[in-house]
Amino acid sequence: MSYLLQFDGGAVPNPGKASGAAVLFYNGELIHERATFLSHATNNEAEYMGLINGLELCLELNVKTLKVTGDSMLIINQMNGKWKCSKEHLRPYYDKCLKLLSQFNSVSVSHVLRAFNKNADSLSDRCIILEEDIEQFYL
Image (cartoon, rainbow, N blue to C red; front, top):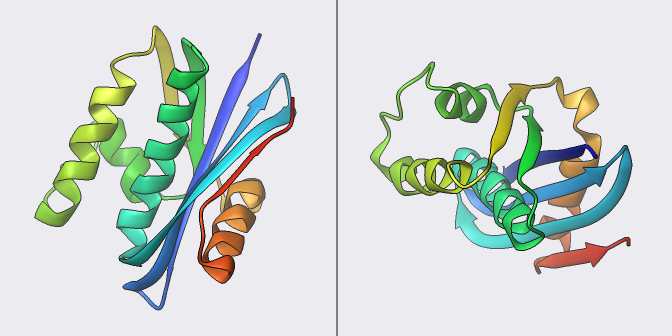
């Protein structure tokens, strides 16, 4: 059993209308996608929202072992403890992610190039265009 969570976020303009998106795969198959529309946020806030969406989804589904990937160097390095969270407006997102991550038995968080994060990127873009939350199960 292998779960992969990909997350992304974006803001147009930055800051502006935004979305945080997450897609969950099980053994290579897309099983769930979730995106939250944010009427006004920065790109980094949206990226964090994408990770929060995904981690909350996994906990709702009782996933205990997880691989997480995203294309935000900031979020990945902060979650891995390589970079400090020095922006006060990001601190609540950062703290929430750490709390959520602590609830898994095993979790890895790694960076991928944007080309390997297309599902989450596309979902985030769609959410901004529609200006509404998106949730879809594929089970």
